[in-house]
Image 1 (cartoon, rainbow, N blue to C red):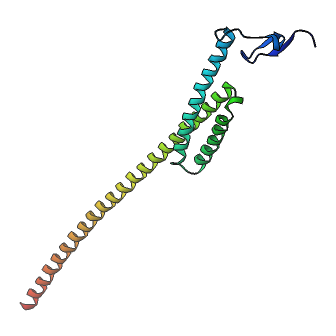
Image 2 (cartoon, helix red, strand yellow; image 1 turned 180 degrees about the vertical axis):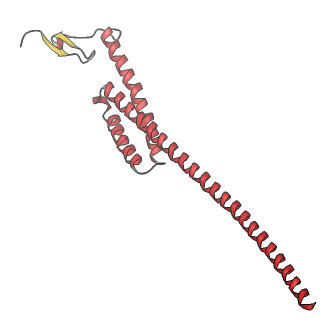
Length: 168
C-alpha cells in the first residue's frame, strides 16, 4: 500500500485521500463536521417520524383484524427493528420504511372506512325493506279486511232477501 490511501472518513462519510491517522478535523465548525451534524439531525428527525408512524400502526392494529392485522404486525416488527438498530441504518432505508408504513396506514384506514360504509348501507337497506314490508303488510291486511267486510255485508243482504222471499 502506498503512503496515501483512500479511506472512508468517519466524520464526513466521504472517501478521503491521505493517511487516516494524520487526518484530523480541526474544529466543530469545519464543513465536514457540519455535514455530519446535518446528517445526524436529519436522521434523528426521520427516526422520530418512524417512531410516530410506529405508534399509529400499533393504534390501528388494535382496531382491525384479518389480513390488515397481519400486515400491520409485519410492519410494526420491521419498524421496531429499524429503531433498535438505528446506528447501523441509512437515512434512505428509514425513509423508505416510513413511506411503506404511511402507505399501509392509509390503506388500512381506507379499508375500514369502506367496511363501515358497507355496514351502514346494509343497515339502511334492511331498515327500508322492513319498513316497506310492514307498510305493504298493513295495506294488504286493510284491503283483505275491506273485502271481507264487504263480503259479509253482501252475504247478509242476500240472506235477508232470501228470508223475506221465503216468508212471503
